[in-house]
Image (tube, rainbow, N blue to C red; front, side, top):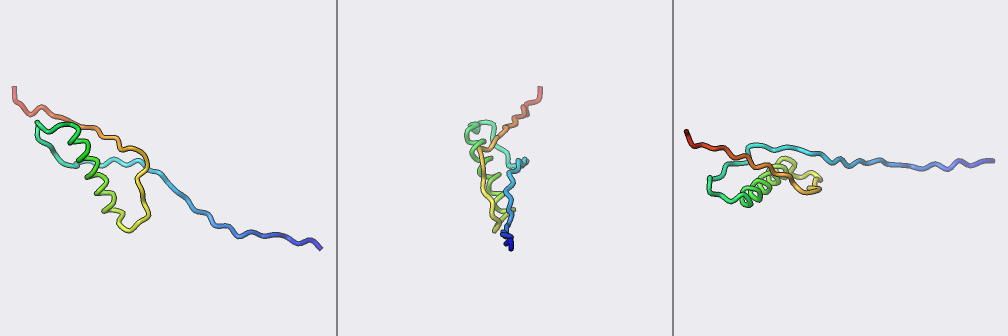
Length: 75
């Protein structure tokens, strides 16, 4: 008599997503760019944490920041 071996399996998944968060604030013209970058990253992370409060999330990789400057002087 042949006996079959059976296995009980469970499957899980992990997904890495790239998201873009806009309108993180505005900074004065004399604000150093390193401050813009660090504050923008902190605000973006705060918003994600708040949106997914209580969920099992973590930040993977380094954030990419693009600072956008606008010349407000009229010519």
